[in-house]
Image 1: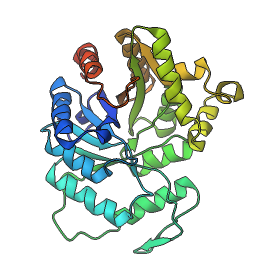
Image 2: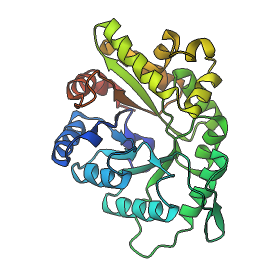
Image 3: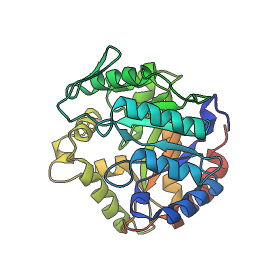
Length: 308
C-alpha cells in the first residue's frame, strides 16, 4: 500500500450498503474475504442502518490492509466537530486505511459557527460543504493526531462541487454516473485530484432479468432532485426520466450481463479518467450479500485491473 499516492485504493473496489442488514459477525467474515480477494477498497453508504463511524470501526477492525471509505458520510447527520474528531480517531487507530467521503445536505434550522466559520443549515450545497470543511479544519486537537492525516473526498456531481473537491479535498466520489460524467469530471478537476467512481453492476447472463434489476435501481434514484438534475446535465430528457427510466438511461448508469460487459465498463471509466472504480453489485435479492458475484468479479478483474 502506498499511502502517499492513489495506488492505496487500487483500481477496483467494492461499494455496498448490504452490510446494514447483516449482523456484525457476518460482516466481519465477509469484509475479511473481500480483502483476501484482492479488492483495493470497500466503500459503504449511510442511510438508516449503522452510522458511518460505527460501520468504519467494524470494517477496519475486521481487516488488515484494505482501505475503508465512507461513501458517503452524510453531513446532515452530525456536527463538523463530531465528524472531525471521529475521523482523527479512525485515522490514528488505522493509519492510512480510512477515507472520509462527505456528502448530503444539512436540514436542521440552526446555523452553526466554529472559530469564525459559519456552517449554514440550509442553502446552496457547495457553500454549505465548503463551510463544513472549514469548520472541520478548525476543530482543535486534544488527543493523538493521525499520521498520515485521513484523506477526504466529496460526493461531487455538478461542476462547482467537483471544483471544490479538487481544490479542498483529495478528490471526488461520484455516485450514479455514466462514463461520460467521468470524462467531464476529470476535465473539470484536472489531472491531480482523485476520481473514485461508483459503478452499479448486475452480473447475470439472462439479459432480460438483468435489465429488470438495473431499471428498478435507476428508477429508485430518479426521485432524488440532485440525481435527476445530474442525468439531465448529461443529456437525458423527459423521454428518459418521466414515467421511469428509459433503456438508454438504465444502460448508461448500470453495467449488466456477463463479466466481460462489466470489465468493459470498468475500463471505459479508467480510460475516461477515473483512478478507481468501486462496483456496487445489484441483485434481485436485497436481503443477502452478493458474495458469489464479488468472487467472480475479483477473479475476472483484479489480476489486470489493480496494477499501475
